[in-house]
Image (cartoon, rainbow, N blue to C red; front, side, top):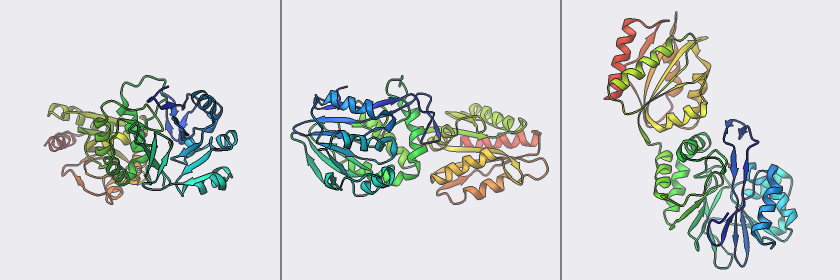
Length: 385
Ligand code: FEO
């Protein structure tokens, strides 16, 4: 597939995978992107998951017209991109491996291979001339690992963005809503590293970019301002969508009723968007992306073994480990004889920055009482202020 006159797609689609990175469901599969720049020298940008090494090497040979590549640029050492490097090095024994200083020890640690005579270490601002194309290297630590680099081709104005701007889903499946799976991917995998993403966005602003070539998902060439802006919102923990997301767990349906009543009241009072997640049944990664997407979140759960219901505990841990901030949070608890959930949830959330708790809380003691209904009404009004 042609990206520009000199750049070809040589990546692969994976429809065999069940869990990406061992935890994220990917019903539409996954793409491991790789690109070939054909010039006086040939550079391949990143490898692919090792299960697809043969397919990838065949793609390279086809797109290079049988000429052996001169360079493999390694932007990221996570195995979804690095586990075919050894196969490449064996197939093309003259090729030089180009990467950051942190990558080469990882190559040895993961795969037990070293190529001391075939390594070119690059850092911030270094360049590599291929002929008409010049590769400019940009360090991008923690987007998503410490060794990550991005690469800007100044001839075709293409940025190879490593994991950034990637998404779940293979490239040969329908993709009519990029943001949905890109957001779940971003907050699941890179969400903690907003400051580092902000740093790299500022570096990218110095380049004139016409095309973004990420390591997952489609190549982006239209409306780039949209993608850059949404990454700016995500990485600055801003509000992407005005509205409220209600996250609940429920054992016998009473906390679910409270969540449902709150959702109805929010809609009645004009809340622009209300999302509801049953944490025991939804994909937790979807709930996590919603929590970062909206500025106002509701947590409703049961007191359980003197603590909170396990799915809510896992959810809050997912938010705190990613450093969620800038939220208004409402708390609803249920507890038949000793409600503790609000106290426990508050304690879990207290280290987060710029969090405002709603004045109104709701304490259900088994089933919904008239006082609970009134409290939910008051909470809905506060959330709509
Ligand atoms: Fe796509 Fe962080 O690997």
